[in-house]
Image 1 (cartoon, helix red, strand yellow):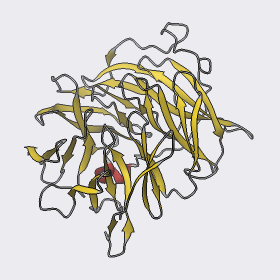
Image 2: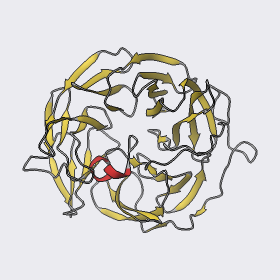
Image 3: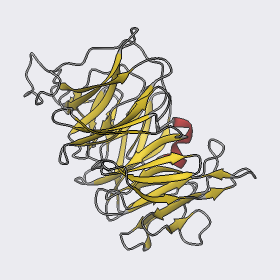
Image 4: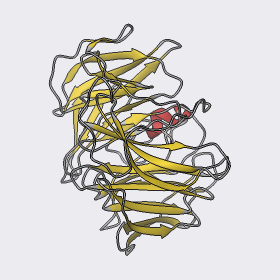
Length: 361
């Protein structure tokens, strides 16, 4: 997960989506004026698509959001997704067309960005975005907008933060730093309610983390991050960020950069020690899923950590719970997670108080 790569999907489906790596093609210029309010969709300003059933998408889902969506299988033609209610009950399945750039699931499970198509959990096509870049936009925490980074490939070009609504209408939020073959930018969080976006990038992975006001593109804070080993993870409202450093995970306030905690977990997936990195955060930012990595497709040492207390809620070596070989999905309230084991087909709910309860399988 692209942070989100297809090779690590069953160990790292810890965010509400997935994107497979793909080669970059043409680079469009995003529409809209920098910092301007998102325009009302119209035939002239928006690639609005009349709702219709996507030709190869199908759904048996009848429950209403919020829903939890898990990846189960893929082929050359489609992705198969399992859908559950927040109580853990099986709610049906969703099949969407295969895309080279993968897919991203909206936080509330109401829809999926599949390549450039926005598909509802009922398999109806909601809209399309103008997007030809390898890394897909991420969903905003309201499940009604997307935020992504576009690139100008020319010499001296810059990366640009762009916001979309579900009709495909776009606006430029802000011009970020330089773009180029050795410069990577990504969106960590996008929150219309908090009016914040968090991005990282620069000359080298994780060299800069910028906190921006989403409505205007104003930079609220900029922080240097020189030793990041994997992409950072943020709370949905861009309030807290977990920076993955060689010596462990630094949990920081995104505005003041105060160090709130340092989390260190070591695992030995293939007989040698690897330090754990944060791969997702709970909705309220109080818990982190920490993964020590390892071979693609293998079970990984993992910990679900209450970072303020430096306490393990669940581990891959615990007698309770199936971390390590499972898909882990934060729900859109509190510190609750679903954990789905594809081998046993068991589903567990990790509640706010740390209780682990089997709800399916």
